[in-house]
Image (cartoon, rainbow, N blue to C red):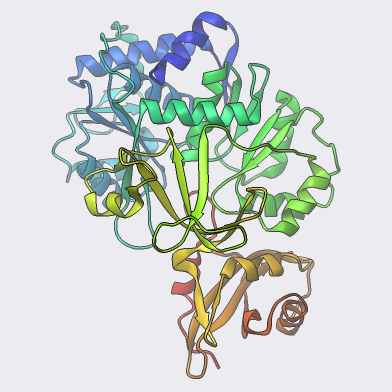
Length: 486
């Protein structure tokens, strides 16, 4: 099965049902199917063929959704790029994947134009908004749809690439994660089965569709025939909550920074959203204190994800017994095929599995499992800080920090120390009404952590730096925290 068949099938089943709510636009399954057919035809007319890469450089909007399914219907490989991306990085991605087409918005044309000047392989540019595209030689999105060209015959199979998701590591340039139609279908099937999604679900997504889990909200909604409510951001929570009530939202995916904002809202009462069936979290593990407080507002339950095997191994790739910390390994049909044009990174992540014919994903995450098979995140392998001769997981210290009332955001990093080698420094942002001191934080940590895990230094900031997906970035925190410990 190919990903675009999600849309074709449900356009037949639920033609007049609303598939997408984006701003003031309400788009039915039939309308979404027809619009993406027309754009797929325009892509083919513009020379885009099976296997060509197409950049979707847009924010969360109706046209981005149309573009994604049009690319798939044309047999192309789409790559969604965050609209905050700067020209140099955009040019790198375009050239790295050898993109032949770019679809963007009028407001992003300055950045796109600068990037395209260094990207000679791009043969077709389509721009949304404005009467005439401000990029030389570009085609307007409206004109592409108005041409009403039939979609091309698509001989793609499920082993062909469907998308490239560029992910920024801690160092170096972004890497393109290669996902076939089979990978995407397997992942969407597994998650929707786990969440027991049905056509009755209304999923509210404020995560960027350039972010993999934000993108999967779209793909999962269309797979099961649900309705996706697409918002730009979580910058104005009250507006989002009003939308949740008005649209009778049943599903809310979030990231930890969104959870922290929700928990600051003193007037939010339990069961304020009676139609909300579940919340999911991604980007980073939620602190246990946040989970406990969220459960009082939004009662939730979960089951093991199907179609996936996850286990913990030691440095030699041998499975470890319960309670022993090691690297998490994943087996499943949704595991990526590797990193685009990066065999070294691919070989590091995908290694021989338990059977001679397969490769399994080594995640770089340290986990432990209990006797019943439940997995517990410990830290990223490269996040571990060695201090006083001991190895410390910054996540464990951060969990303790989040248990202190008033702590809104926290990151723990290592700083040079002449005695300890590395000293622990906690960088925190507090609730506006909190009046915490550094000693308050240190005393709290001393009550809940072993001596060598108690931060030596505390720094207060208004907010912590975050990645494009909304995850607190320890790397950026550490970059501003290079001074030696006193």
